[in-house]
Amino acid sequence: MFTAVDTTTGRGVTTRSLATTGRSVQTSATDRYRCLACGESLAYRPADTANAFGPFAHPDDNDCLQTANVSKEHRVTQELVAAALLNWLPVGADQVGIERRIGTASDFLIGDVVVGDPIRLGVEIVYDGTLELQRRMARMEDNDYIGSIVVVSSGRYSAARLDTYLERLGGGRVGRCNPITGEIQFGSVLVPSQMTFDTPGVQRLPEYVT
Image (cartoon, rainbow, N blue to C red; front, side, top):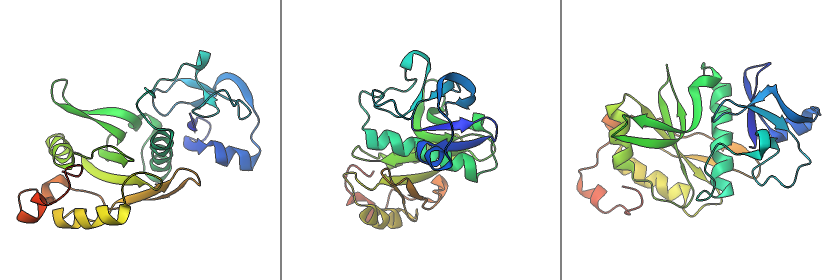
C-alpha cells in the first residue's frame, strides 16, 4: 500500500508525507498504521523494494486488494484519492474505502473509492478502462449516492476531452491526479438526477464514456 490511516491522528498519510517528516520505520504490523481498504494493521517499511505496491505492508505481505488486473497508476490514484478525501471530509476512516460495493447483493457496482455516511460519494478512477457512466449514475441514484470522476494524468484518456463530454451530460468537470507527484485536483460533484443520457448529443459520445 502507498497510503495508510495514522490512527494517532485519524488522517490519511502517504509514503511521501512520511518521508518528508522523517517518520520512523516500523518493520512489523502495529496499530499505528491501518489499511484504508480493509482496516488491518500495517507495517511501514520504506526500504522494502520487494513490495511492488508500496512500503505499507499487510502481515505476511498479503495484499487485501486484487492487483492482477489493475495498473500501478490506477491503484496509486485510488489510494491517493481515498487518503485525500479522508483528510478533507468530515468523516471517519471507517467511512472511506477502496473498491467498495454500492447497491444490493444482486444489483450493485464496485466504486473505486467510496465514502459512506453522511456524504455517500462514489469516485470513479479513469485510467484505460471503460467508464460506463450511465449505468454507474443509475446505480448511484438508486442508492442515494453522488459521484465524481478522477482522470489519471498518465492514462489513456484526455481529461480535457472528458470535460467536454460531461458538459453535454450536464455533469461539469472531471478531476485530475498525477500518481507520480501525488497532486490531486478534484472535479465537479455529479448528481445523477441532474444528468441527461437521452439527448441527441449523447448518442454521439464515445462508447467508453456512456
